[in-house]
Length: 77
Image (tube, rainbow, N blue to C red; front, side):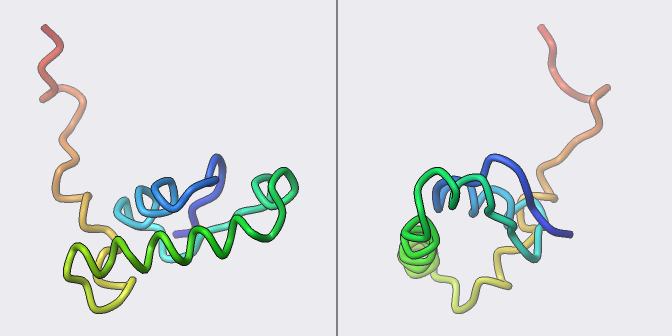
C-alpha cells in the first residue's frame, strides 16, 4: 500500500504509515514547499520513532488497523 494525497508534515506521514502504507508519495507538497519538506518529514518521523520506542519505521506500519471498526459499530449519538 502506498500513501498519497495530502501528505505535507511528518504527522501526516505517520498517520498514513500507521494505517498501513508501506511507502509514501509526496508530490504536491514538494512542488509547494520544496524538497526541504522531505528532510523535515524524515527528521520528525525519526524523533517520533525514538519517542515511541520504535527501532524501525516498519514497526509502526499498520498499527492503527486494530482500532478500525465497522461503520455499523460506531456510536452515532
